Image (cartoon, rainbow, N blue to C red):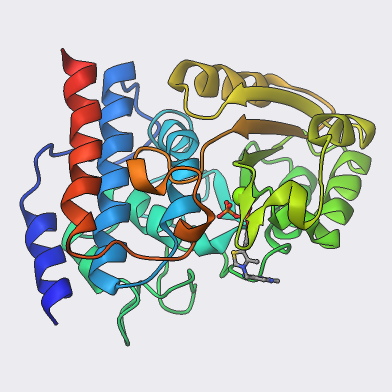
Length: 304
Ligand SMILES: Cc1ncc(C[n+]2csc(CCOP(=O)(O)OP(=O)(O)O)c2C)c(N)n1
Ligand SMILES: [Mg+2]
């Protein structure tokens, strides 16, 4: 199919090769993290383009938080996904599979070219991450609301075994309209899961429009505080703020931590930013070069 071939060609012509390592975290420079995140953005755009479908909006809003985490904090080994000492990363909002697969590809779990098979019948890169198709997926997700409970369960098990591994989770603001999310928030505080950190991607948009129009969730920070969580509110695109927030979360004792990242849905691609329409839609052949140009321009601006 034409778009798959074209996507693959772009994936092979790699303008800034990201180096991979046997084991993470690695002490990336601020610039290194920025380049990694922009590469992830390219991959999100290219994989959704190749598939002709997928969810770029919420993938791009969480890119910087996940980029900082995956390079500089998360303990993981691409050659051994089941490494006993690894930290756990649970994607409660599993529709951001373009982001998840790009993180795997750019840290060396599989070849970058595989991203051109995203959502293809038989590909390990299904529309939502499936453990039965891809070993490195911790848990299949996509049905919103469940992932934080899974993360809490893993964190509780690790505590009982006196293990040091940390558990991270990512959920969406629209996703938090699911009641199960609040049950997990309540029980995680009750069991004092200080080995659990939640990234709350507060991009204000969900599938049907503005979160506050569909089903208001504000005030989010106060709600977490009332449930006895430690809260940190940051600009979810600022590398330094993200790094500081993760450091705080890792040192925090007796309570779980939520990092509430104020983000922009579609961040980094001009025509996708703050547009609900780009929740679950792929760029076409005319839009692809504009999207890649936006990403490259930011890199040029950073460099000069
Ligand atoms: C239980 C369930 N209901 C509905 C959906 C369909 N769905 C997929 S994404 C989405 C909106 C999620 O919004 P949000 O959590 O804000 O995600 P983001 O903005 O980060 O993409 C919906 C309703 C689903 N995947 N699971
Ligand atoms: Mg959202």
